[in-house]
Image (tube, rainbow, N blue to C red):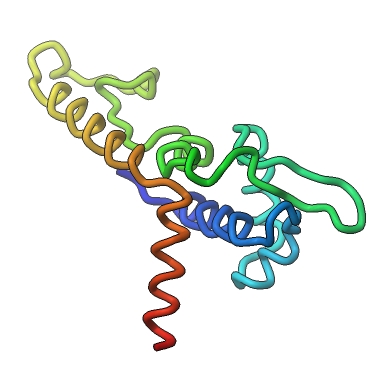
Length: 146
């Protein structure tokens, strides 16, 4: 599995939006400033998340981004697929193999193993929601302050 900064920063941006007061849009500038990220990078991430239907944009002076659905309906799998295209890629079983030639493909048993691993990873990531991450993050902040 590839764990990219795109996925990490996308999750952080979505947590910022989820933690905004009810119904209040969160601007890319506010997210970038609060999380010490490049504004240009945050804008690109939010654009991709919007294309995938995870956020909505709102124009105007008090515009920004809100979640397109409840945080309990957004999983890590959704986020990673929106930003990275897949949670786990193997050239021998995925459409990724377009230009890759494997001389062992017909007699190799690894494809089934990689496919099974992808299933386990996807299942696990499907169980972790933005809401559960938000709760866990809040609990850790309270614990660190106490």
